[in-house]
Image 1 (cartoon, helix red, strand yellow):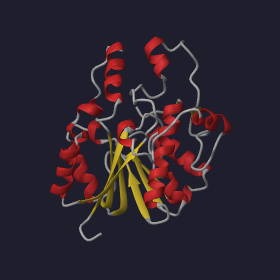
Image 2 (image 1 turned 180 degrees about the vertical axis):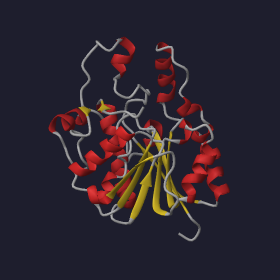
Image 3 (image 1 turned 90 degrees about the vertical axis):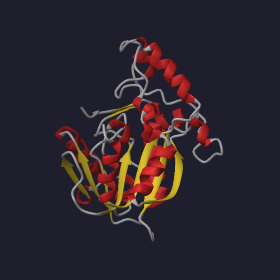
Image 4 (image 1 turned 135 degrees about the vertical axis):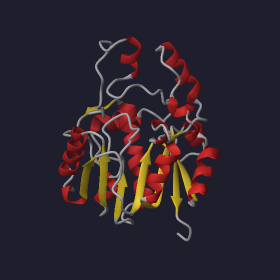
Length: 263
């Protein structure tokens, strides 16, 4: 079931990093964009394209749960963007071409990721694919945490969709051209893949081990550009590497921009 909350500083940081990257690449430059139906974000799904809607893009969001669709509509309504949103419940995007399609950490969540990628590509003039970055320093730490939790290794790392060679080969087989890539979500801490709705402390030591901070639902999620004082103070205490040469060492995600020949 899709998550109904964003929980924790890591989730807040990741959401902001994704928004800033998409705004940098596309803000004010695409008329239509779509995301879904699979969303690998450990928080409220279907909200990655919100900053593009703020700059004029009409966004189509497909989610697999009616409650998730209502939460997407609630956030867009708070932002004054209800007229720039089409929110649908279903298992695939509408059969039409969008200027931009975003696949956020979805491939490793699907049984046949190449087929899923092909479906997304057929609907896209330009495709952005996010996958977990398996060569970060934190991969070993993430494995240790999962061992302590007696959890299996993360499929986000194990899937061959996380292999740059395999993924770039798949783009080429579809007829796409890799325009560029970016390292996204690059704080100092590793991506430990805690369950959405909980913190690492709660997963290691139990739900009563401490109250989670920075918990946001559809009615309180900070909108793009918003800077809640408590969140800003917390983020200011932690170094990040989004624009650094060290980004490949710390990145949690690798974003790929794939375009059609001639673009």
